[in-house]
Image 1 (tube, rainbow, N blue to C red):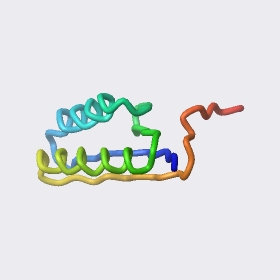
Image 2: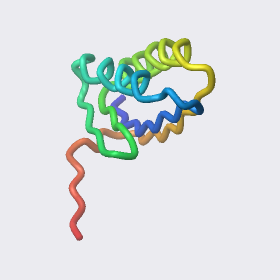
Image 3: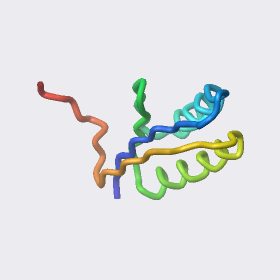
Image 4: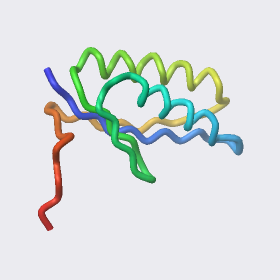
Length: 86
């Protein structure tokens, strides 16, 4: 099953850039389709692969920060080719 996942990672601390950058770099290196914008990162692919990657990399990131918050939206389809028509 294909899914689309939107992630917004918000470390609740002053030093936050490095953990976020490392998290995004790990997602990019996965071979999955990863799209980024200033507010979120989207990951597209097979459910088990995407969720396994997000789970493991989020755990690694949470071990590097004192407090953090992850907003995640999941759509049951691959929306990587979506382009707005307006």
